Image (cartoon, rainbow, N blue to C red; front, side):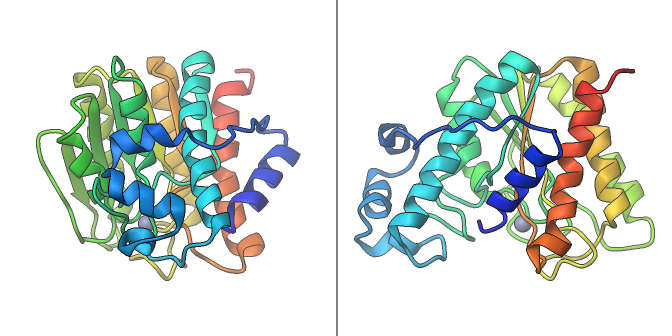
Length: 273
Ligand SMILES: [Zn+2]
């Protein structure tokens, strides 16, 4: 989470974004999404499940998580209004209904589907790791679709509204990746998605120690360009979240990769043609 403030500041300084403060999420929304005993533990800082996501609990971490999740709802509203928006946060795609997992506390992707039950929410999850937590929520929320493209073949949960595509590291990885992206675009259209949440993870980058290193900087940028160009042309509202990316030092290694996503979105939606 330490990367979020530097990325927000850099994207604002570059003129790509106007920042909105979403405040803290109304906790009642979490109690209908996750098991109430888990929500209570994380809010109060007491109980067995308090650090189930893998962090040591602090009030600052709790408030950060509540702000990020409030940002999900705010970003969805802005996307409906403007066609494009971002939440400078994570989607928390490993979080399950009963507990956190893999540094993910409350599932902000499922939260959007719960908040807008009349909208069909399609998650295009391009994090290096698959959205296994989101897959559990597709069983609970009929208006949620999870489409994951992953370099790490772990924890894939598939059902009729959760599809995973594993891309192996090979010289032609990016060709397979692009094919999987096009399949995702087609699925979102077939399913008549009203909103796309793009998990623009950069942990598939070749220098990231948490992934399989299937994509270069240029390929990540090309992926972002393809996503924004497609959904802009379709007119389907989209917001993106940063998702994974773990290189350090943040300013030098990670920030430029996340900033590329903002640049690609800005160029697609706001540059004169
Ligand atoms: Zn990841």
